[in-house]
Length: 396
Ligand code: XIL
Image (cartoon, rainbow, N blue to C red; front, side, top):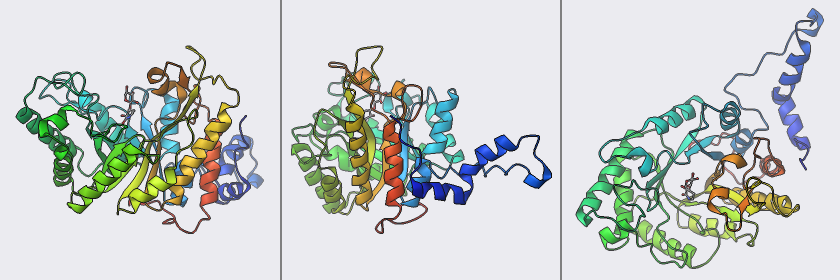
């Protein structure tokens, strides 16, 4: 099922940079090398990623390739840690910057796991997407057990949200590239979600306040609104579009909109490029922030075996179209799958009736799947396209 690893163009790139030669040359040369063979080829500098890694290919087209990171694995699981460093130029904490984890007890912060990720990112020349400051989900139980009800007063909630945003953004000041300031504030029908924040403010006013507080705390960070089901034109993406347009008109410091991109082969592929582009046309950056492509699978424990043997073809197509949509929109600055090994994906636990899974680029043994090679080739081919910002993939 796996595709040949490199497109022809890439072979020459890899050979030119010497990267593809290093492994085999040094292994074969060994201690028996004669002087005529000039000894082992020196190892490349540790800080240069392999030319065929997603991150290096993304650099060539000015696109950061990210991943969500599970901090239970980073540092303790050698393969997981190596792939995180080698393949990705941006990281998002899957959970450890959420309010539930940073302030489990009221008034006591625990930044340890998030700090560890920021250090890892610096060491590996990666940028960090901070995720997420204002959300109804994964709140500490002392604040709300379901995101919609609470025993705290409106005034208390307002003061708490301000302090939370200021303290967290200041703690990571200078280390965060993009913050998901507000996550999932609208329902699928396009109505505001009536969360504890919505109720405390008596409307959506909490969102403008949140962006302003975050901007004061770290003026250089890019500030994003992030949500799912913005990928297709419909009541939700229309409502969010109208809303962020109003924020821009009111000069609220919003820089971008994140399209989560939790895709599923049972639905048609969304008009994603159109939606990325129309938000970008408002003067915003856009990003694909949590991409995965789930499909129906066997029951536990085989949740990563698709029931349809042809499912991987649909998944390859969805991954490829999601990547190309980002590549085609100049303002799309990062493409982030929500993790990279099916064993660590949130999908089987979340979508289990009927069972879905197999949603990521690497299988349960952290081996790249055909979906990985498709993205590799899309990025390589895009390197010839004229309209992206060009080499470096610098800090936008
Ligand atoms: C998920 C994590 O992947 C899970 O580990 C956690 O149990 C629940 O949250 N939208 C988001 C992400 O913005 O934060 C969610 O992450 C997935 C959906």
